[in-house]
Amino acid sequence: MTHKGNILYVLLGTCLTMMFSCQQPGGNTTGSEYMPDMAHSVAYEANTYGYYYNNRWGTEDELHKMVQPRKPINGSIARGATGGSVGFTSSMSQQGISYQANGAKPYYYADTEDERIRATNEIINNPYPITEAGLAKGKNLYNIYCGICHGEKGDGGGYLVRDNGGKYPVQPANFMTDEFVAASNGRFYHGIIYGRNLMSGYSDKLSYEERWQVIHYIRSLQAESKKLVYSEKANTLNSIDKPASLIKLEAAATVSVDTTKVETIN
Ligand code: HEC
Image (cartoon, rainbow, N blue to C red; front, side, top):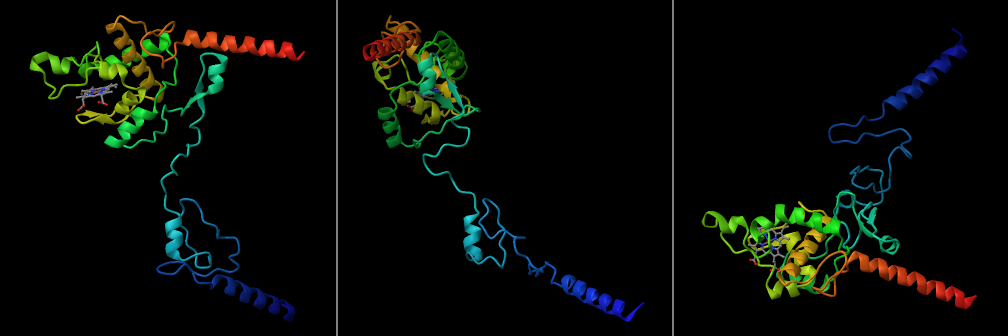
């Protein structure tokens, strides 16, 4: 081995020793590294706690706090929440009744008496028009989830309160009373989400659309008890809920108005 070669080996050895003699992480030390630039992110990483002593952006406590999962900001909509939409006519699908693929939908009223009143006053429209298919779906779900207490006719006489001396300790609401016929859709929706007193909520059993179809079905029971009509073709029970066939007519009317406009301009 030449003299020159020896020097090279010594230099190489020194370099390697320097690199590997860096302090290894472990115990209470993060270790020290040779040229750590960019090996660690100095940015805050969502949901990742990676405090690095060369990170000069904040204290360890601050960083720890920043990476904790937090509640979504009120009013924000989760990614995908606007993914689905149903349309019954072309104009309906443009209005886009959107819901999450799993049937969830954010609900911005709390489970308190004040909020129940607010929901009752503010939620007026059923976002779904009345359709035969929706009523059939609503009937099925109502009989499974609600009829056992509220009665298949909606009169509060379900078999849990009626049969065997009435096993259920309190009287479920009678939807046929004038109070519930006049009640807004919001009162029903809020009731489904949270329940009330001894009734528990059904938001985990019924998807967004299912809740509204159940409410349509309750309306149809109310109409039946008053010998009124509540169907895809007509609604003589109230002026809020829209029969699907009438929406189609309205949409058609809008289109013809548009045509006139175009002709006038020409
Ligand atoms: C286990 C029995 C039971 C079942 C099942 C049940 N409820 Fe109830 N529900 C009650 C009782 C009891 C009340 C009366 C609560 C009170 O006012 O104290 C009530 C009240 C209500 C009210 C009135 C709330 C208000 O604002 O006064 C609505 C609306 C309602 N239920 C809807 C439903 C719907 C829709 C379903 C099915 C998805 C359902 N309930 C299933 C027992 C039940």
